[in-house]
Length: 327
Image (cartoon, rainbow, N blue to C red; front, side, top):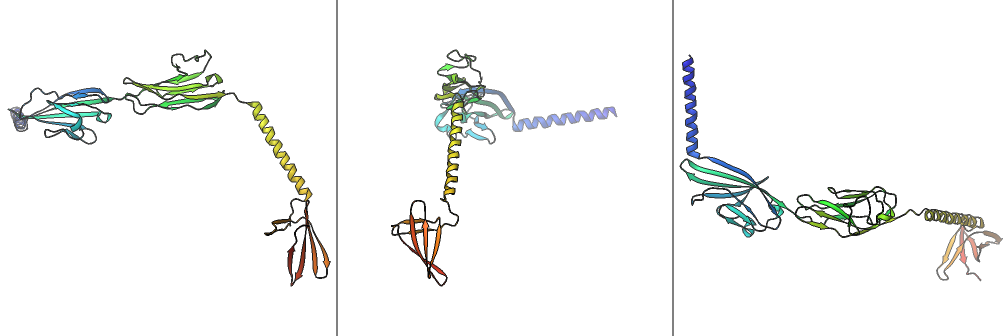
């Protein structure tokens, strides 16, 4: 029994070797190369090298850019896309004359050639990292502030790669080099975060007034924003008290005036108003005195400044008003 089991095991191993050798002859072999990382500065040139020992007439070369979707860079002996106008082939390598940040990513060259063992396929992978200088940073500097309050200045850049660091300047002086004292030697309490780009004053004072600007910098370059002035003023307690007293005085005077007008009869509850378009006379009714004269009543409408007469005649329960201009 033991001899039969060993014999079967040997047969299975022989069959496995035969299948493996047949597959190798039919389809060839695949030999991936090492992984390369190439760094380039934006708008300069870079070479993506495909390390392959021999180049023959029967060799077939393809370059692909990997990602969410695979796109051809070099296919059927021709560069593809915009690489036609800003790249060239050097043997199996690609020379990009004007690299951009959009070119960053992973590339793979594939070379297939016939061999004695069948079709031979070799691959080489290259990762391209594009370094980008910062753009002009966006600086947020308040134009005014009150002393004793918390004030934060912000600076940010979205384009730099690697991510830039930030430095704040006041009146042309680097605040990072002398964080405890201002340019005039006065004490100043602030915190600068070079990673996030914030400059925070815990208790800003009038001596912190000045021109502020921020500089963003990385290994490729540096850019700074335009200087902006921040004016710090002390809180004017006397002015606030005077303004409050003035407003209260005005409100009191207006209230007394309204009360006086109501007592004198400037405002009437049952007042009537009539306008004569010809003479543009406005009648304000404050007092009405009726004197019976047969079927005609004489109404006297008086105001404080003038008095107008109206003849009122009753007819079928209606009142007809006849306006008379003042004499």
